[in-house]
Image (tube, rainbow, N blue to C red):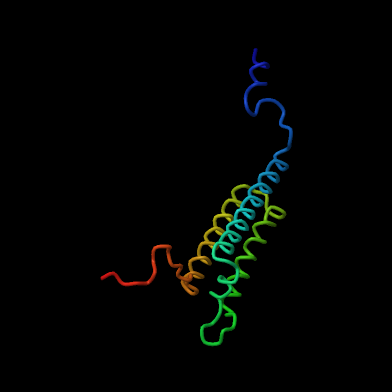
Length: 135
């Protein structure tokens, strides 16, 4: 009776993969999923108002040249995505992966908040807003 019950329970029986293999698979899944989510989020943000409008946000108003701070923030974001995408290749411990993932998520949020503070988004007029004052 005990052997038949063990076959139907989750985790019962001999594991298919060793602990190290399972940790590597979980690390690959976590890091890959987080990197894909960030790439999709960045693409969504870039395409929402158009690539040209987003590049214009990074231009200096006086010189009309791309600001070094804007390029710096872009490199930080790309670097964070590359780092998290490759993290599972050299770290497999679940606790450490989770902590590093949390730190990189916080870094992503800070770069987004500081980027929006430094380079505010362009105002988009709504369909009903014609700029006329009501009498």
